[in-house]
Length: 493
Image 1: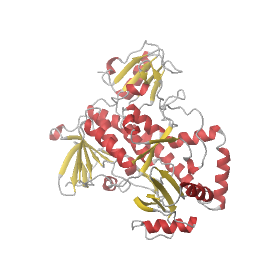
Image 2: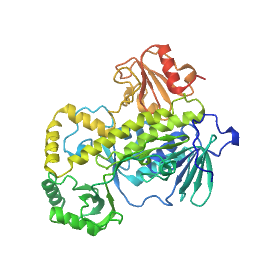
Image 3: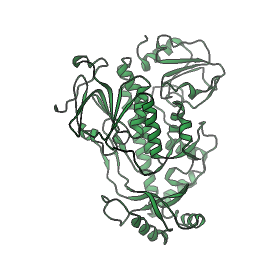
């Protein structure tokens, strides 16, 4: 294996020097981020190989929540019905530091709910989607080394096999091998507070559990038992439990429950048990030459607010069409760099809000006083709405320059004459939604769809949507539109 070397800036046409490469993109890791990215790339006919070190999918059933923005992304690609079949809808409320406030009225989304769904099901559905689109997935393949040159990336597996592609994306989790091989810094704070989390059966009536949880939650914010079907999700502080390197046991949960609640609630027959800390870290860079990072490989944080999986899937949605544009040869010069420019600040914000939430879970008097104050402030609709939009990622606004507030934000699933807007985005292309019916996408029609619809529920004449559903332009002037089509979609055909 040649020593690791980074080209200054690869060109879209590079690769000719060594002949055609077998793959355009290799993705390390077939979790939600990797599988979503593979599917997004395949929408643009990019040759994708996904490498997963585990030989079998995870067997434990951990329930996670898809937040509003991620649910919208599934709707954009025609996947939502598959997910709804396996999930349970819950109100979009009580996310921030587990402060129990109702969702503000009129959240700006057709999908204003949380979807509780087993994480293995999310991975399976996204992997099936990617494979249906033509992605290849190889299990039992661990990345051992990476080298890149002006023509592509060489990935060496643990068994010595070498694979070549034009790009590599590390979606291989918080202990990312790809990130470590790149030498990318991962600054932040180590874990200070460990927590036990698991799903298990209980041996006492639900009303007894609910009463005890309600009694203790004001003091112990990192303690709860919540029903999920036949089992309960159990969260309890891990203080005093055995070495964090040792997997927790049912006895550990029983011990901690008795210490806090005076009873172990008869917990038994666990589905899965885990231990997590509140380590918070963010990669210095999301890209080094032909290698990029996404998901937990780029950022880790406490699970409070349930943002981690959602953040990774949204990374993939942002990166997929840009990397595909680079490979297909029509990307504007700086398009791929906007991945880090847009997603790094989003991750910074998530890390900060989880830091704040963890402080609000402390049993210290000062933290509890701040929590009581914030609880009062959340009675104001504007405060409650701001925090919900932060957690659910519907409040994100990318910096596209000066313009109306809608510029850079995601467009909700508005009504159009063909039904709903997101039904027009299944192919992962841009879209011009023109209420004037006077504009055209011209030479960009191979990358951008057009809908002339004076009945569309919009407060502006026309919007140009990127493939990720964010508003790239607002106006009614053809020349101004052409300039922005060039900015985001390259030169016209």
